[in-house]
Length: 111
Image (cartoon, rainbow, N blue to C red; front, top):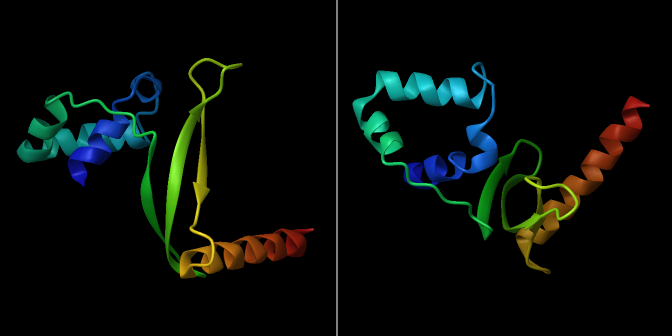
């Protein structure tokens, strides 16, 4: 899992971030504090996962597993949009719908 996460952070758009306090800063700190992490980071394993399964733990609806797909935006080089879907009729689908309803209600309360 760690190896996959590192590979995903090495894709070109992330390599050019000037974010020393965010993800890049965290990776730098972990690399300098852990020999094992540093070796894995130095392996230069670069991957862009275009499809797969992601699991989220949301404080309102709990665990959700969704399929994702990355799509390049042809009009804007370097930009990617992600879609997340749950299998229709599954508990994950029900949780995702509940989350959408909850988010709509939360936004309405802020108005």
